Amino acid sequence: MAAIVAAVLLAATGCLTPLTSQQPLTPVPAPAIPLAGAYEPGAPGSWSQIAEFTDVTGVKPRIVVYYSSWNEPFSTSFAQTAWDHDAYVLVQLEPKGVTLASIAAGGSDAYLRSYADDVVAFGHPVILSFGHEMNGTWYSWGYGHTAPATFVAAWRHVVRVFRAAGAANVTWLWTVNSIQGASSSLRQWWPGAAWASWTGIAGYLYRATDSFGSVFGSTIADIRTFSSAPLLIAETAVGTTTDRESQIGALFAGVRTERLAGVVWFDAAQHAGLYHQDWRLEDDPAACAAFTAAVATYLGSGGGVHA
Image 1 (cartoon, helix red, strand yellow):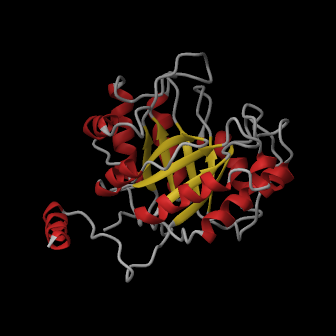
Image 2 (cartoon, helix red, strand yellow; image 1 turned 45 degrees about the horizontal axis):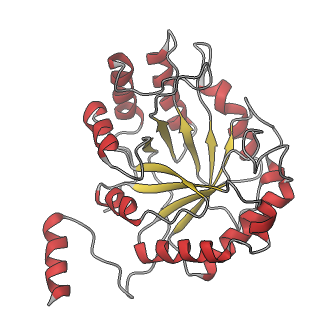
Image 3 (spheres, one colour; image 1 turned 120 degrees about the vertical axis):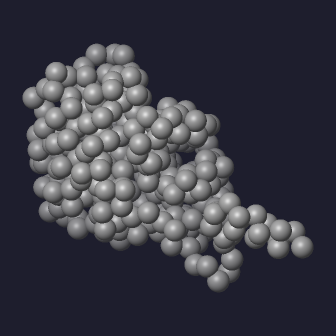
């Protein structure tokens, strides 16, 4: 009886039916139209800022991001809320306070198995990125701190643990920083096509002179020399420059022209100089209008919406 009641409630609220043995786990399909995504600082603890983002911009994100510290469990409740709002959750797993060598050697396997089990139990597609922006110098797992071969070994080990747990619903996103502001030797960090589902780039338009091409062009071209996987702009925003509105339009035009998987707007207020500006749209009506128009023009409804 409880199962019948639950099924009726799910149907009434428009939610997807629960996972059963007849419903295989599947990853995120390659989108036919680029997906619009967003990061809000309140995630995964709250959905309220994402709701506000939608209210102000009129854009319903199809990807929502949160950053996860090492040994922090998978946020099933946030992932489910995202799914109920027609969005995929993208988790940036950050190996802080642990060495990549120890991860590769199995030192974090208990944590990874528990995490993988929770992702399997969730049952819907999840995008996972491990050790993002490793070609930059600012993270302990990155360039100048960890050898690329060690990163690759850790990446492959994490994927093996998830595969052993049956987590076929994971889309593995390998995310680098734009080579405009980091090491240009990307291939040395690449785990191989068998180990990464999508590729991703983090990069920002800091100045009025920045363009989609200057920030992302060389990085996209480099990645495409060794990977044909869907490519996502996994973290970006346009700074409070004198030409912010046109730059936002050009950003989305570039995403569509390059046939990328999507673009995730980093909607956070930072106040620490050129590289950490106030990226939010909510307090800038002109930029907000430009964002809304750009999504409508180049992405339509956001593309790739799951049922």
